[in-house]
Length: 149
Image (cartoon, rainbow, N blue to C red; front, side):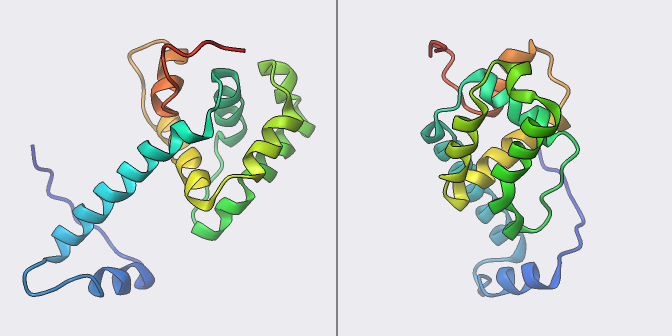
């Protein structure tokens, strides 16, 4: 099913897309191809992080309403989570070692941080027709067969 969409590109994004266009590759093809690649990267990257369900729940709780509009701000993912732990006690709420989670997040690559942020955004933007735990597992690519520690 195709969904015609009109979008307004920021100048920097438009420049990047134009650099990838060619006589045989349209702007629409470039955007679709690059988004396919990006989403595939997120899917491949999330399992590498090895988050538990409680850690993912803490992250979505901490990022509720947070906007990472600038790609450079993803480096502050760990700080957002750390602030929520310190100010709101989310580590106790979710039964997570907050210090260990913050260190795990500090060690993420930029691509991994982007994947975590994308998963949290997907969690909050969709209305799942399934249990919350199953939805967080799906968003964060947490193996359904994995046992919780």
